[in-house]
Length: 177
Ligand code: CO
Image (tube, rainbow, N blue to C red; front, side, top):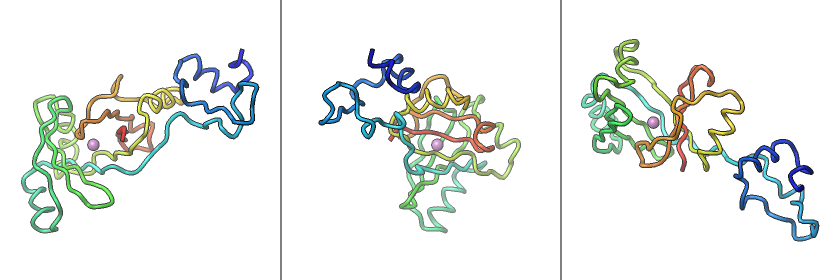
């Protein structure tokens, strides 16, 4: 019965069974219905810019540029076979750069480098606090996800990629922080 008195979005959310624990009841409300001030607007929140990814045809050369010429903190090379990439992370303090190089014949970076032979900006990654809720909400808004389910990303955390055509031409990675 409670669901019928709530706004449409909450009815849908309750039907998915995902609001458990997120409705705080007002201390002054004995009816059992959440106070208006306590109702969360969204079930997930966008966070900080985690990294900007740059595809490069020469990972060693690009790593050397940032490490030796620009003096940045640079990680070891990491291979991510699930994503078809080799990565190097560059710590800039307020955010990171992710250098990407193809790994394996089906790498998505291979096609990108065919179109952009000298490399280029490949995607941006923004943190979210709840990736499952983010994906559910984005699907409802007709924003396409490139993968059906979140995959494990470079930091061992779940990530999804959003279709660039639905994001102003930019490939957007969401990472659960
Ligand atoms: Co990334």
